[in-house]
Amino acid sequence: MQTNVETQTRPETASARIARHASVLSAQLRSLGATLFPPMAKKTLRSFSSGEVARILGVSDGYLRQLSLDGLGPMPTILSGGRRAYTLAQINELRRYLAAARPREALHFLPTRRPGDKLQIIAVANFKGGSAKTTTSLYLSQYLALRGFRVLAIDLDPQASLSAMFGYQPEFDIGENQTLYGAIRYDDQRRPMREVILNTYFDGVSIVPGNLELMEFEHHTPRAMRDPNARGQNLFFRRVAAAISEVEDDYDIVVIDCPPQLGYLTLGALNAATSMLVTVHPQMVDVASMNQFLLMTSDLMSVVEEYGGRLDHDFIRYVITRHDPNDVPETQIVALLRSLFGEDVLRATAWKSTAIANAGLTKQSLYELERGSVGRAAYDRALESVDAVNAEIVQLINAVWGR
Ligand SMILES: Nc1ncnc2c1ncn2[C@@H]1O[C@H](COP(=O)(O)OP(=O)(O)OP(=O)(O)O)[C@@H](O)[C@H]1O
Ligand SMILES: [Mg+2]
Image (tube, rainbow, N blue to C red; front, top):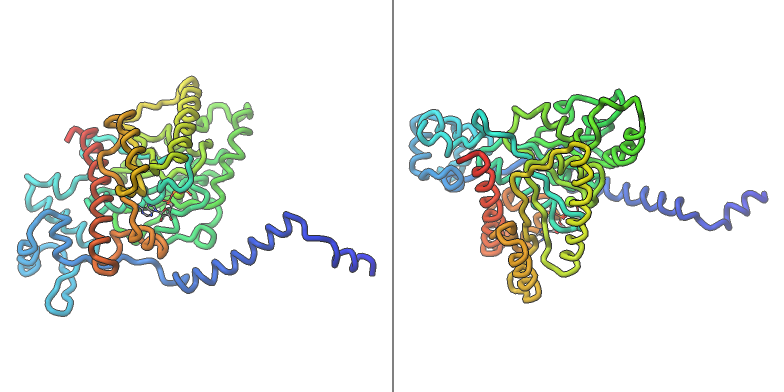
């Protein structure tokens, strides 16, 4: 009897309360997920109109039409009114066809790495939460794939927002040992990198998804560093690079979405990276926090360098994100960053746009939306700004490859 009374009156402990909140939230998310993304309904990508394909490939619509009439290259779906539509896989097939048919323009149609071009590994980092790391990684990965590059996206954030954007719900779709942790862990459960790579609905982008399991690396690394038996194994900061090198030949560009912390995972990513993008939301608090990030990163990098780590990035660039060009204080901060860092700040900035934010709510990018599904002017403006950012990054990559 007495215990009964006790359990009735005893206040809920903090941990019990948090656990209860987690369980109701999890149930709610599950049912929301079931409505928005029925478990069996895999995320798919829309098709592209022949006009869009012509623009993407830099050929005329008439030429594409002639190809399909002549039965050359992939056959588009014919929609009502005779409009032709291509899937992204067909666009990539067209690239291969055109590269073979017009060898002098092969590099334009199929810009994949040539012998001697080194794999590009781009880490998108900043420990300021919400500086648009994931959005930048998503748009960059998709832009690169639309241009014919073979992309591996790595979600290094235990929150796994990038995985969710690519249609993998971290808590339901990704099981044990299916994140990058599986390929970099210290024990005998370690798996080949190839086994943790998943295809996505976006032809040309593969992903190593994330979930909470990635935290294990932060917990196990200090122990592994003390363990004499672990000597001879790769040190923590080499493990991300080692995993990527297993699949090096399959990709042109790796994009790593880093978590908003400077832990062992981020350091591993920065060490693997051939270049780094630091996303900055141009507000004073964010810039102050970025300052801390830079100080800590340089301190930690010098420690890594003492241990023989390699940190010779081909380029480091600041990417201004969620930029409102009509906001005077923001403009001043952008000017300040440019005066301090010069050409290390990308010329183009990703404009703040409700079209981008809204698309994000349904786990989509503007590249996935049909033009016309949101206000045309807003869509075009936003897309133009992210395209300009991504085009500048491609220029930097091309420069590394001597193109
Ligand atoms: N250009 C933009 N215009 C409007 N909203 C944006 C833009 N870029 C990102 N956002 C929104 O800002 C929020 C934070 O973006 P995002 O998740 O990419 O940041 P993050 O740096 O990855 O965050 P975290 O540190 O939590 O990983 C998201 O809701 C996203 O939709
Ligand atoms: Mg993120």
